[in-house]
Length: 161
Image (cartoon, rainbow, N blue to C red):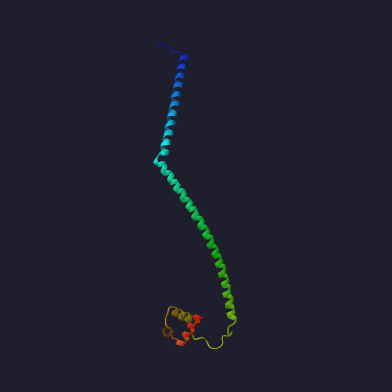
């Protein structure tokens, strides 16, 4: 075999390089075609359709939660306004109670606490009222508390008024 010259070797390598470039281009084109076919197959596949349906469902669900959240915010704002209104009313009523208690203290019959002491304590009066609210008869209450029928009846009438 004859000795190859450098020029022939370079030409042969350039020719081989050109063939490899052509082969590379053809293979890249085949890969691109395969990817395109796979993408088209995926678009037409049931899996793609299911994913789109799940996405639509999740979007709808998110919209529902958002509308529910807005509704709850409005509801909370209304509740807060109502609470503030009730707090103001409560403060007015407390002030009224304080004013009435002060007025009652001023209108005490006997400032020195002279005279006859009450036979029944406040605790007993509350007890009588609770028993009557439970539906007990006045006679039974009188025997249980140890007071007369008339006195128990008097404190029961105070309840009604």
